[in-house]
Length: 113
Length: 111
Image (tube, rainbow over all chains, first blue to last red; front, top):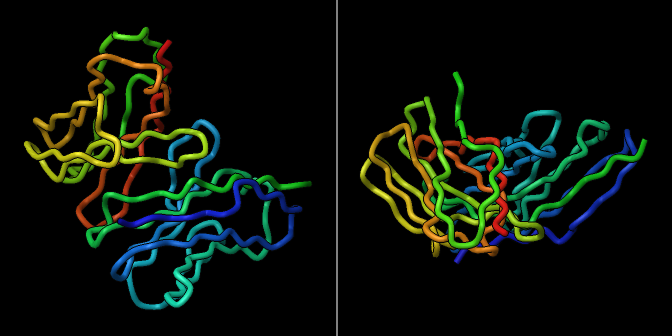
């Protein structure tokens, strides 16, 4: 069965600092990988996704993620964090169709002024 | 273009009551699904549908019922609410193989 691990429950970074959120997955074949962001009281918004091809994926709001098959990881990065990035971030893995996602438990990001 | 619309936004039920959470999408998406979100557990798939008349169980289907009579609507029924069903429920839709679009959620409390 597929699974996703996000080892960091809470992360606090200073505004302007770089950010890396970790995600490790377990999946038998080539996975479909996603990062979603959730602001308080809102639904989930897709930041970026990886299906195949270039292992460095660019997303919205200046985020990027790198797929590393050898490490079963799909870490999310941003070079300079803005206060508006404070939210909860979810990594997810999908079956071949990209549907029926399995989500990680999320990482809550706080941004220090 | 409204996207995925969930109603109600908030609901309080007593144990044993039944109710239906509504989900509608106006994007002509084939695939629709229901997730529940609980603190420290992420989102877990309850039921999903790949088209009108076709539904299947996800990871946590017990206590919930679904049907898909139209492409647009995918209601989630709680047959006899239990405190363990206190959660935030999200409906999502997509074309097969494409990105999931989420609604804004329904916050359900069962007392």
